[in-house]
Amino acid sequence: MILDYLPEINNFGEKLIRLYDFDSKQAMAFAKVLKKVVIEDLQVLDLSTLDFIEKKNCNLILRLSYEDEGIRTNNEETFYCDLTLDSFVKMLELIRPFCTKETRSHQHLYDIDTPIDFLFSPLGTWDMEF
Image 1: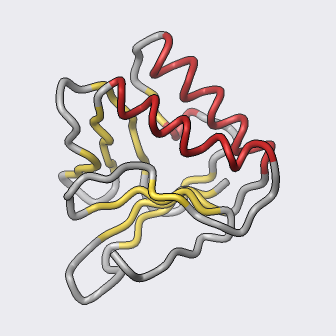
Image 2: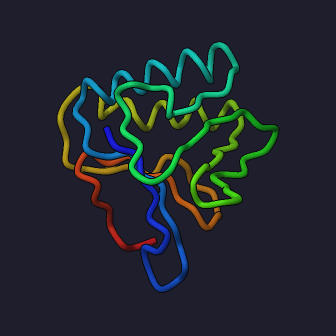
Image 3: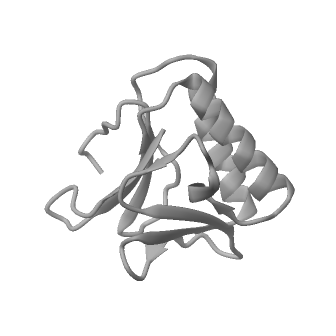
């Protein structure tokens, strides 16, 4: 599983953090850690601490928040995904289909109007219609 940041994915200045190049076992490992650390233990999850995720050009830290703020950064290297507990539970549900079978599809992990989207995609691809 690879984590990377794409600073310009279209002419509208939209950006993308993506988790890609994974199989169902790695998707399941990510889902388990997300559920345990963020949803059950209510703790911060630093993806750089997970041995099955290779950081390409960024790091992502998942944090609970009172409001859904999405992904933000100050330096385009370390990113923070601040979401409510309900949104992390929804994210877990969006990941579950990738845990049961191999697929070529993709999923945006939240639907918030922010400049940086969060993509979960085994092949690293997505549609360009936003």
